[in-house]
Length: 62
Ligand code: SF4
Ligand code: SF4
Image (cartoon, rainbow, N blue to C red; front, top):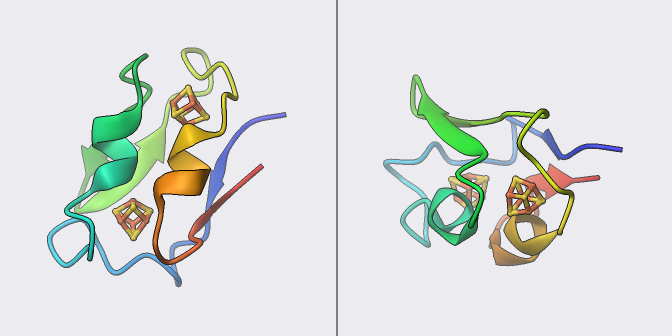
């Protein structure tokens, strides 16, 4: 299982209430900023769930 983004819930990284915390919190650098939206690299994600917990908009899920 991998992490998915619900783009309609994400404000975009520039407007994120937590300043793109999902990207910052990932110790494996598995999330990139692609056109102002987080993109999860499934090959690097360990499914630890930290990014899911960090998102104030509940825009990430597994
Ligand atoms: S679940 Fe963990 S490893 Fe995967 S993208 Fe989120 S913070 Fe990174
Ligand atoms: S923490 Fe949530 S709202 Fe902020 S950039 Fe990441 S997915 Fe979007």
